[in-house]
Length: 196
Figure (cartoon, rainbow, N blue to C red):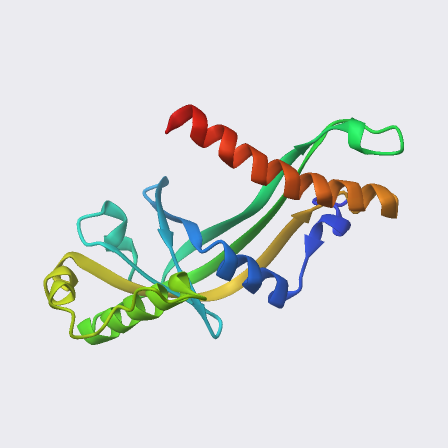
């Protein structure tokens, strides 16, 4: 038996890029001496590369240069799927969209290039209203740039994991899609009401 099941894999780069653009907060994983180092940070996609920056004092920053290997995970929507939503007899499951990427990283040393990547990321995150625009001559950027390390990741391997009840009949697939939408909207409000 093949794992993961083929119907839960999506090799379409455009679909994976859409996940990256819609859910840009990444889990960035590096390994040093068999110990994983993990950071959570937004990354921007550009022509087969991921571009970002992190605090210069983050222990992972030292590994984000010299063609080191990294793994990056982007998480899309996810939720529990109750058998009660299906028209056929099923077992409970969990549906999700994830993108797993592997690549090699190199440092961006030019401060202006780092600042431009920050401007590009801000523009992406401010879309579509663009209520705030980060400018290259922003005086706070000139101070901030000394505390970050810029990097880019050349993507060498793509894996889209789109587990969306594709092995069910069409009406059940549609029910699972609707449940994913409903559950995500409701769970966010419920969660925030409990913790914030």
